[in-house]
Image 1 (cartoon, rainbow, N blue to C red):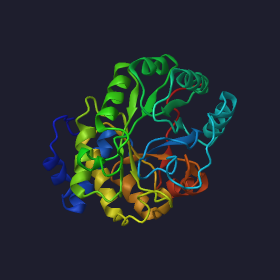
Image 2 (cartoon, rainbow, N blue to C red):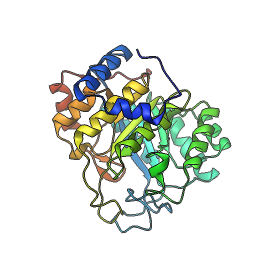
Image 3 (cartoon, helix red, strand yellow):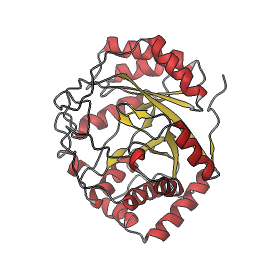
Amino acid sequence: MPTARYDWTVDEALAVLETPFHDLLFAAQRAHRERGDAHEVEAAILLSIKTGGCPEDCAYCPQAARYSTGVDVQRLLDVDTIVAAARNARASGATRFCMGAAWRAPNDRQVEQVAEAVTVVGALGMETCVTLGMVTEAQAHRLAAAGLDYYNHNLDTSPEFYGEIITTRTYEDRLETLGHLRTASIKLCCGGIVGMGETRRDRAGLLVQLARLDPHPESVPINLLVQVPGTPLFGTDLLDGLELVRTIAAARLMMPASTLRLAAGRSQMTDELQALCLHAGASSLFLGDRLLTTPNPGDDHDRALIDRLDSRLAAPARAL
């Protein structure tokens, strides 16, 4: 396995991205096999536990209150509803259950409600992950005490391009939250979005920010922009699919031990493109027909694809 580094420069990352395509994929697949079983795919399911009404201005997000996207605002789901969804996720073969709430920063009462759900879902034998926005150090410790395994908090893009996408939260705010989570010994699910109009150098800059985190995020979701009518990024020029593959391959080489998740945007990818992404080093998918509020291929399609690739879903991380 390549030696983990935490001192990458943007120029170095750009050079990796610009490696001749077949050479890049060969190196990424070799690193992927050194990491573990290249035929095993981790499955997760993501549930929106509090939908819409977010005060942020993320230009990609249909849940921002300031955009007219047709998303209905829904209050935080009760614990019984969340646990019922987690049971269904486990029955579908998911080993990780992710809960997303459209908050800028939850208050302590809201964190307490989520912590209760985390404990009960964890008792089902599933890994737990939440994404709630910015949290304080005390809130991070409360979630850790509840048994939270992962916290998703993406950097989204490079520091240089970030201001074109979000103005209501700084890059430093995001890094501060990551620091709180590490202090509480919660594993990080931290990645970004491609296809937002950024340059290849911006994609290199995002990978550098992720690869400079010590340790590297345990899980790195790579999202392809889902263009939603009503959001500022609707109508953005589509990203070449092979650029997505390059990004995943570079991430595999720069963060050799991390689990790379092929996340949002799969509903607009061909099976062949998804297969290339898995070949390049991704080893995790979201099952189900929705990711928070945007479409996803669905369990039947994903299982058929996994079978066609002679792959298999990963076994649960812990027994019941």
